[in-house]
Amino acid sequence: MIGISHLTTGLLIYLFLWLITIAVLWVRELRRIKKHDWSISNNRLFRCHSCHYSFLVKDEHAHLTRCPRCNAMCILFKK
Ligand SMILES: [Zn+2]
Image (cartoon, rainbow, N blue to C red; front, side):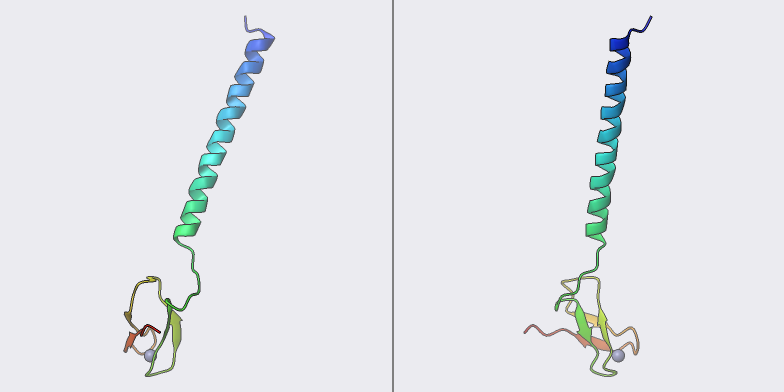
């Protein structure tokens, strides 16, 4: 027969495992959001010299990309 102390211990273990699961899922979600997050910086902002269209690129280290509007090559010069 299960006593009160065993029932309490079982509930505490269940609650503890549930909190660990929530914490793991939360940390995983925070990492995923940080990985795919967009941020505005001068390294990501390109301006097309042909059509004067400004756009952001995903790769922060890219120095050369194509304009999404007119498909011209855009070069980001370091300032
Ligand atoms: Zn363009």
